[in-house]
Amino acid sequence: MQTINRIDPLRSAVSALRLDGPLALVPTMGALHEGHLSLVREAKRLAAHVAVSIFVNPLQFGAGEDLDAYPRQLARDAAMLEREGVALLWAPSVEVMYPSGFATNISVSGVSEGLCGGSRPGHFDGVATVVSKLFHQVQPDIALFGEKDWQQLAVIRRMARDLDLTQPHADAIFGVPIMREADGLAMSSRNAYLTSDERIQAVTLAIAMRATVAEILGGGEVAVALEKLREALLAGGFRSVDYAELREANSLVALDELGTSSARLLVAAHIGRTRLIDNIAVG
Ligand code: PAF
Image (tube, rainbow, N blue to C red; front, side):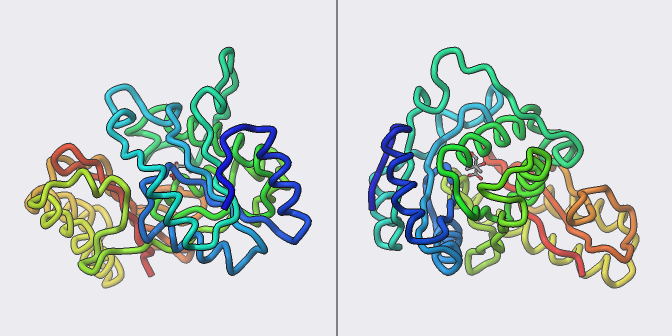
């Protein structure tokens, strides 16, 4: 595996890899876990070579968020990727990604509004801007993202469509299902922040969400089911609930009842100093 942290050698490496066939990109912020590895494995199935980017993107963290605390463990991550047969690790510094004078912002409206976009103003501008740069730098044929960040995936697909991207085309941006711990907690680099008591309580999120899905599918009123979900989280040790909403799965339009289109339950809640997100199909 080549580890590259400057643009010129990246371009040469990418051109060489693409001679062999399709190149897949798995963008990450590092602190890799089984969830990331499932993206890499799916990427290997779909493409001749896999590139992974590791970049903790300052633009997507708000003031007072966990930019400084975000786990950085490049050597460990690189060893994991090497074992998975990744061809290229793109690990630019902040100065390479955002050289002095950098002044461009990509802002996607609609799907970025509400949910995480509501509780983290500017977050999706930061995501869209860095992912657009990563796409231009690596020029992948396909890209893979975890479905845990369901809204992020919708924002990136919208951006790719609206900007007529071809490397990758919007239809070549794939979501990979959430990987869960044995008790149901969605895997996340931020789970590392949980104390052992919080880790035990955190499972309430997945359990309460499954109960909410069952209630809605059983004909329960959506608003009532969502209120019960908030109460269950607070009773189960969560400090606050950012949102608990039923949305149309692709457009992310809010739903107050189940219709014919596919629906998704999306939740963000704080436990101790950790903000956890999760989502699940309804139906
Ligand atoms: O999902 C993430 O890890 C990040 O938001 C991403 C897509 C790598 C952009 O920084």
